Amino acid sequence: MANQTLGLKQHIYNYLLSVSLHEPEILTQLRQQTAQHSQARMQIAPEQGQFMALLVQLMRAKKTLDIGVFTGYSALVIALALPQEGKVVACDVSEEYTAIARDWWQKAGVTDKIDLHIAPALETLDQLLAAGDAGTFDFAFIDADKRNYDGYYERSLQLVRPGGLIVIDNVLWSGRVADSQVQDNRTNRMRAFNQKLHQDLRITLSLLPIADGLMLALKHP
Image (cartoon, rainbow, N blue to C red):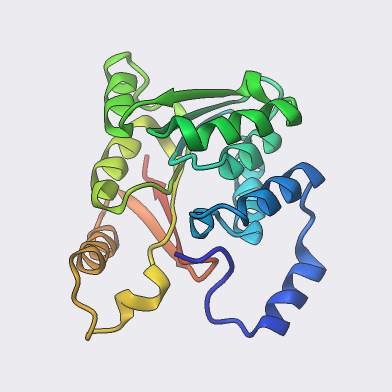
């Protein structure tokens, strides 16, 4: 995992942020607090969050999924980008991590936009499908446990509308997917997932080298 874009020398990365990042102060504060957390590597990069917010605004999205909340940065950056009536359905299993998220969402004044489900995400997604929410979401962000990426993807593909976008984090896996000498189970699982999406005729695909690799999957009509 990486909380800044891979492969850039530090001075180039610093310059990139200096001329492109417009991060609201509330997000900066949340990111700085999360940097002190023992699992800080799970934090998404600020340039990644800003890019996702731009996508949401370009799509004029109103209903979104956030699969994997941690301390709440990704849900907050999307909630801030949504219109007043917008909604983020957020999925996580940790009361501990999401307690931090709830605090920052309240400070930012977006608690009414975020519907947090504390349960295994596959269960939450299946409940949404059972409730008739298929094809009603504009945007989904997947950044949770990697062993369930395929399940999250398949359910998200049902939940987003035609023309909706699924964004998937960590697909470059700190570069390990590109190293044939790395053959552990998690890396091989990520390789297989990437290959599946590359061959999936249900989507238009683009893998961007932002942060730890960001896969964009646009659902075909």
